[in-house]
Amino acid sequence: MPRRRSTSTRPAPRLRGGKRTLWGALTSRAAVFRIAEGRHRREAQALLGEEFAGVACSDRWWADDYLDPQRRQLCWAHLVRDLTAHSEGLGAQKQFGAAGLEISKRLFAAWGELREDGDRALLMERIAPLQEELRALLEEAATNAARNRRHRTFAKKLLKRWPALWNFASVPGVEPTNNHAERGLRGAVIYRKLSLGSQSEEGEVTIARLLSASVTCRLQGRSLFAYLSDVLAAKIRGDPVPLLT
Image (cartoon, rainbow, N blue to C red; front, top):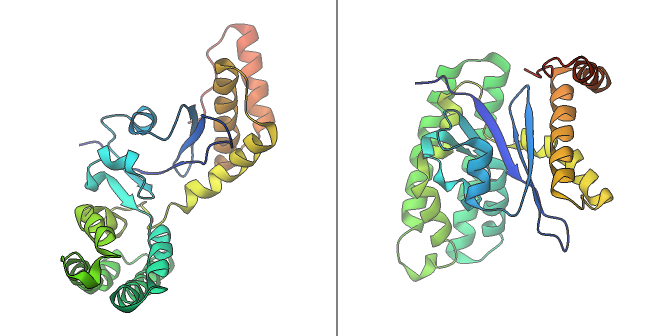
């Protein structure tokens, strides 16, 4: 089996009034952007491929559901936002959200300790009881009792994707959030909003490639100007385009 790698993915919001969506996939040293027709499964597959062998950290956007849960890491930052919304409800929904937030708080505390001492065995030890607590919470919330009507669907979806909640604990290089993708996309999204996109298919391809080169150079601590200069020089000489790997 190919060695797993962590990839953060996210479809960015489309331009207002437009039909094109900016997609991004980022590792620790590379970024690939693609401007596509929409936010559909086929776009995620075109970006990551049918036989993706890494672990993709993303939000719970349905287009990524084609990936096996063992190949996904659901973003806990997005989960915290949803649990916060549930905690602002009433009755059982409020209790569900509050309990979920407490579990999330302890999970991020355990993750913080791993980042300090690198002790993955300790992380697994800290995560195990949280898994049991969350499982019990979700299974109770997924029942058909009337008190669960406002959070039942949310709980069922998490249970269906259960392994994708915990890959960060056992797979080195995988994080519990997709903040890396969010940060990588921010500049690209702002650029597209200010420029209003491109008026042609070729223009969109060019923009996606330039954004990919720009963010990849930043991740690698390289000069984008120097890289583009090398690309132009290679083109003039008829040499292969320099790689960003």
